[in-house]
Image (cartoon, rainbow, N blue to C red; front, side, top):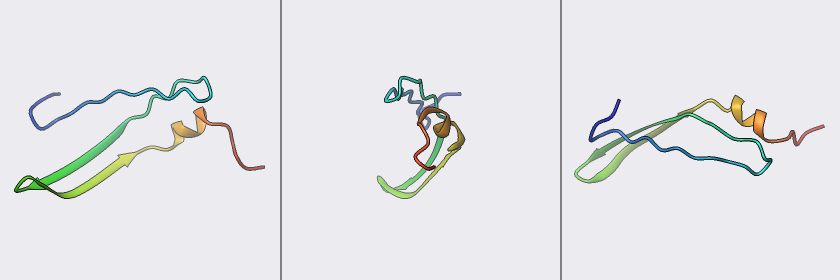
Length: 56
């Protein structure tokens, strides 16, 4: 799904040597050329699979 109002970005995180494939959905509403509202949705579970635990 693509169009003039949609953007797809792909990134890679390799601090631990593990690939970090994370899906984010950002909803940006704008009016008169300015951002009116920004909402970000993501599932943080996949982050725990990439980074080592920092708690004991």
